[in-house]
Image (cartoon, rainbow over all chains, first blue to last red; front, side, top):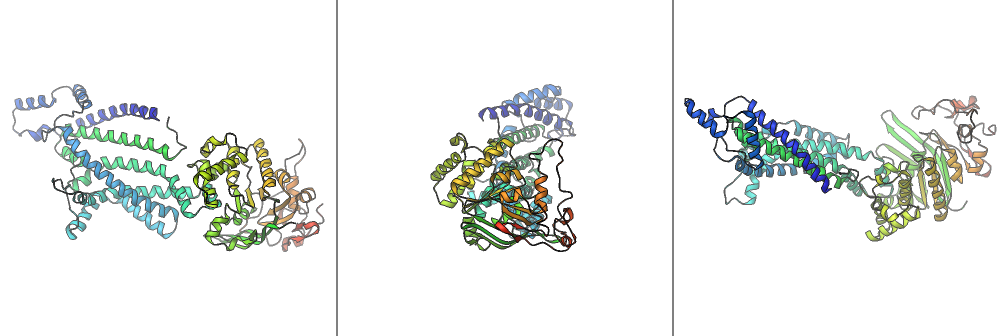
Length: 314
Length: 324
């Protein structure tokens, strides 16, 4: 097992390298001049050259890449062009917020998705299955930013129950107050993965229920609840994969939701970086998120054989 | 006959389909004494497996209905409450499935699955159940049972899995064992070992056994009495020796002559012509009449009843005496 983990971590290196090349070059291809934001329109050529030299933009692209990569390996992603702060510090503060939001949203998606999926899977073809499936499809189809705005209108503007934006960062905020800021963005973020989890759990449960061993379990006198445990255990490994992948998407894919709620995570950071052509921030954040994704997949792959003995990781 | 462990009368199983009800099992009657083995023979779709599952009420309740009387040890299974049914399933009556590969839950160890049944039925602790599971694995002749206890089903060979399945079925010393083609999925050599094992256990534990098979040779090997099913009905029933030596129903005769066992090269095998009837569209008379070489006018118009003759022999055929 340990050997497997080490092997997978080594495999992650070329993946990370490829990602870094893509991150680096994509940003170069994108139109717009990052210096236009920090420099006045009538800046002299001398000042432009100086600024370029300061950010290393005067060197050839390949050199720029290796310089960037070398620094990135030591955890230094350079300095934000827009704010002048260290990119690493920006990412470090943002990623905690994104991770918190993503985990909270995943928990919601998990509870809702498992409940709906199990109920639907056990009642395939009945009205309750059709309702659950319809809800699941709406969850997948509704744009998260739109849902976010609707939630804000209902729960913040009309009912005044929950804060509309921000993360309640002030020092004296208690845990429950901090959590209250997370509720709406988490729900907006959870809608899609909840729908996806519902649909996969439904299909998994329906499939397991057709298996002969369910009859065999009944034939040895187990109660329906005991059989339910068996069914859930059988559906768990695949459900885990689905959820793990969704958590990855939530980490990286929350740009819109974080922007709607002004949630100070990586999504908002990316959004601002895109708007200001802040290349170092873009490159650094994308790379870190890609690595998180790779790592999450690894965690899922390691956990799976613990749940399904037929899978061997060697 | 000694006290019957199983008494089935007028068992009817209907499946609800979109085109209405289909009768899969029609007025089946079975009498089985303690320690007796019944071989239930017939083609695929003749209702053997459905009959077996009906005895445990394993058919999906929404899509099927069972009527008649199924008495095991004097208690009517069809009238049991859910709680009684759970105690009965795997308690008085156990089942061995055709495919041991799919009949075990793949994500639990074999030991756990056997223990689970022991804990349920005997209220044993985990440790006690494990000890008993180990005994059972020894009983069915699994080598190095201590390690096998912690094996997952996929880590065992087909024959070993079927032995483990038998061990599971024996968990709470059932009086009646239902075996649904338990050797069909196994290699020929393993098949014989499993049959011999079942025969031996059945004698030692004095269990009544219903052994479903489409293999006449297997039925002859293990059965005391034989019942032949065709299109949901029992068409012939009697002592195994009598029925297999001198069949009185044309279908039994056809089955016996179409077996590949003992046929020599170049010898013609008399296959039964045609196909079994569609259960949703049964002929008005005898279901076998369209394929029967003895069939006359009456066979196409009336259904022959299962008549009891000498020696407890039962046949449903107007021409029973013509069939040698």
